[in-house]
Length: 229
Image (cartoon, rainbow, N blue to C red; front, top):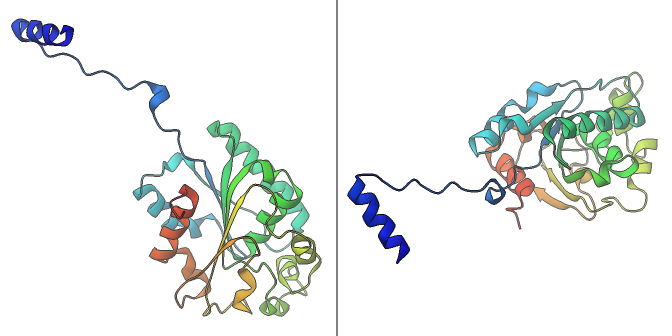
């Protein structure tokens, strides 16, 4: 009855009742920040297409970050610590409690190291690997003599033995990998797969094509947002 009287009074006065504002507490929380980790001899720019696709789908651009690191000299333990510091910077900047990690190729190894041996298990919600050499690649022998990143990627390297002993996907983190039978850099291509992860075979894609393939990018986004369930 009261609502009817208010409407009648508003009509009589020639005014319109103001819309009720949505309380801030009722708004959905922003998504966790995404930290992209590039591969060997690459840089943050390789994520341009994926970042554009994420923002086009509604992911806030100010919650997308790309970590840059030296792929040839630093040991994996050092890179894990550097990634930890970068994640802490992102968390402080955004006020978030967790980040999601999306890594390509070699970048999968320091990202895994951070989660398994650093503080990542408590600060990472989702971990995604595109064409990662998670069990090594024979192609890395071609540059292992002078390149630390290549040494880390050789089958049965010290880094891979540590990462793969025991639980390959530790902690409460959700893990996913994407691999292609046509990957010319990861031999065998199935090296990317991890026990306990959601392992997805893509179409016949080259190593770097996984960064821009529309279907793969959509699947990664769905995984991070929980829409893959």
